[in-house]
Image (cartoon, rainbow, N blue to C red; front, top):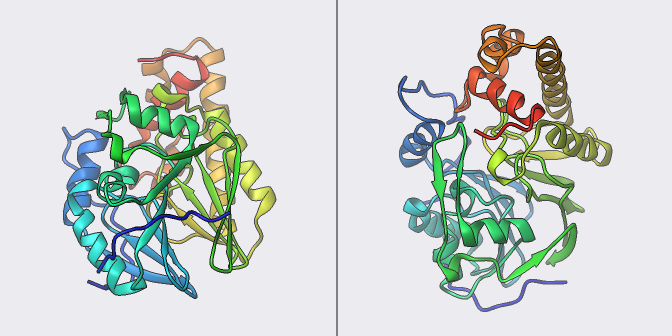
Length: 315
């Protein structure tokens, strides 16, 4: 099934890809403030992933564009303040109007361009819980984010619960929600025959994740979802993370191992009667910080999220 609608004709093509998440942060900044500061100044880069398939990075979350003979389908829309720049880059790269937009999560760095595209008739597709979050808005603990509600033109016009199949030219897109993970609406997009998978904020490479407890995210659900993805992809699959560099299956396996180890360590400390402050002080991520601790989410923030998820404790 195709996404059909009349989009606007979109017209800075950059080369290469930058790793923007590892910049040094100011000590008093929230996770969201760190991210916003970097998103505003990072170069917008474009990398081809296949015939007519392009990755855009720098203006928020990683964005994928898939062009056929007449139209462009977009996965995520970046931050609102840079959507004009994204539109120029899309036009110069695909030379086709955007008629369909898929959101992989409801957070601002994936949905900030929704209003721009939705106002011109683009069909917005999202898992049903993403649609609810965008319409209502909420605050995210540990992150410093208050987002939404979004205007009507930014809201999904087509939603699904667990699976949805779309076509864009010769490319088949399988949209799958495995249940609560980073949030309760995370969507994985599998592309065939090009063997690409787009994971949104289920995985950032190589950074600790946000577990959004306010919208149903959980450490157990995150691990379960990663296990389902690993069972479906192969060594040659190109993995597009929510942030950071293109990844391989081996990268995702290392991420899953980190998640499982930290969860088990935190659970052991909880079972020993330790408080959240004591668990953080025990540094259960110590041997992972060198690889995964260079992004927006500090080790202490991540441990607090895991602790709260395992104890069903909502700040």
